[in-house]
Length: 263
Image (cartoon, rainbow, N blue to C red):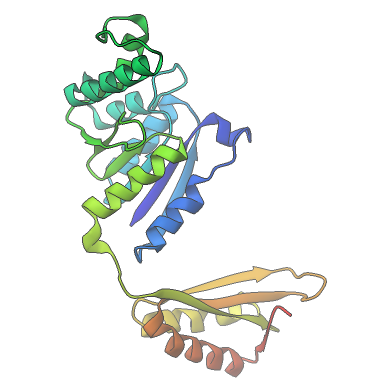
């Protein structure tokens, strides 16, 4: 299963709108995969460490966005080390990449001299190379300052322009063997005159009888045009959907349901 952790006070306060959730769903969907869960966390070292400690004990493939920078409100690197029960360690390759980026920035300013790692500015930048001991790097094609991974957890910046290609790289490099190359989709209908409790047994039976097909049921208290209803349907490989959906509709009608549309 795939999970997503989105870190940032600015998301939880509403100062910035999260864009990672929809994009990660898209990136996985393009590869025939699906997101199983997502969790938002503040810039709080203890809370991040507590959540990661539990997550590290599972088998999910997890992407974590945000908080890996070098400012006082960035806690993800330290929290990951706490959760993994290792120390932060100056990663030599990460440090080299960061100094390469520092040299680029200096040249853009017109300074062609050698980069001084001990300058206050570069010493601050190099804190981003202080990573959990034993981690691997996740390449950053935008500015080369890497993310990192611990097991099947992948830590990337909060900036979409960096995070999204990094997540793509992880998927295409590490998990291509999981891609489902057949098209996936869903079928749904609007159901009237029945409650969810009345159709639960049917839904369980449809899911059990049709391999790789999942049922969904979305009740609504109604709108001005529709009234109380349930959107009910199936999702999964396109080649299996028609049979499952036909069985679903027949079963709903047999229970006394009335099938309608949104119009």
